[in-house]
Length: 306
Ligand SMILES: [Zn+2]
Image (tube, rainbow, N blue to C red; front, side):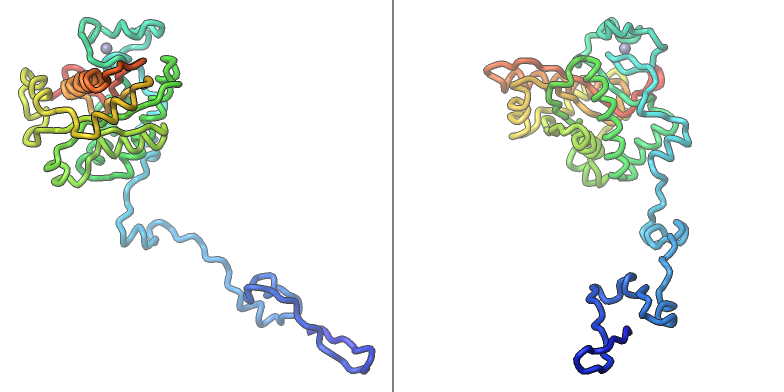
């Protein structure tokens, strides 16, 4: 402590120590007035705990490989999807569909009357993308679903910009899951994907559809009956879903019907038809522009439907 001489009394006095808060601040500890023994008590900063010894990893089971790492390991770049048909979503060779005439479609779909205006996808339903979709759907990995939704949203935003529709609001309509199946699986994966998309696009998610069937998935149904089954298993959503959809598109918008995988396209087609019919019925004064797009994370190539 610094010693000073009082000018009036001539006695030595101690200068008050400067006020420092909190009392164990490094600045105070490092003060030269503090002895070497006290300085030695300062603990060095704690080194980073390696993942293998991290209690979060050991006790809470955080062993999932990050999505970015998974995709990089598989050589998948979902930020720039491989060429696909903007009408039906199947993989095509570069230049098969003219960029200035996307409505002409590819050799798979050019003669089909599709109920959506455009289709957006991230990749083929195989290898790592298939495993990611299955992890979301059956593993219940919500975070993975949200991340995939955000990736899909960025790609959708690009496609909307190319189509000159980026000024229109986006309304996301998830393919619904039946209540019983949702309870069994513990996750409504398409709703989770939509929430991730909505977060990225500042879009609204409107449950404009409901599921009436829970016993069979499309793959359990014979190929010839899939379209009829899809129509029978979907219905317009209960109030206020349909009304909210009508209000949202009254001033124009792009309605995007979202599913995890497009296999035969029967479910998405049935959903798009119901959405169009619902908007026409609910919007008595008409609407300015109604675009219906389809979107799935992955698409099964024709002939590999299983
Ligand atoms: Zn096509």
